[in-house]
Image (cartoon, rainbow, N blue to C red; front, side, top):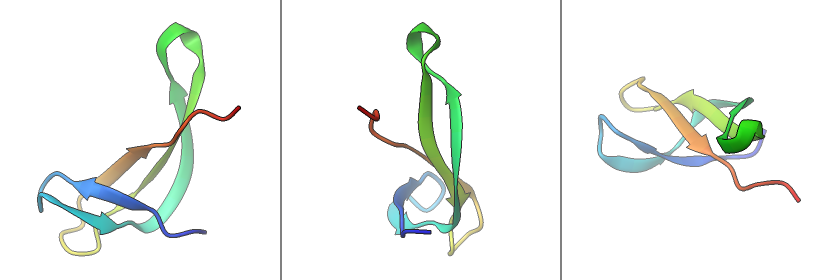
Length: 55
């Protein structure tokens, strides 16, 4: 899987996610949105990044 950069709330820094997985969630208006979920390589906190809408 491609490298995904996300913000770690605990470290307060942008880092590359460890083991990113593609997930979906319900957005506004009942539309499904895509996101990436992984862990911070430094502290192990769960990281989450909402991806742009697919056209």
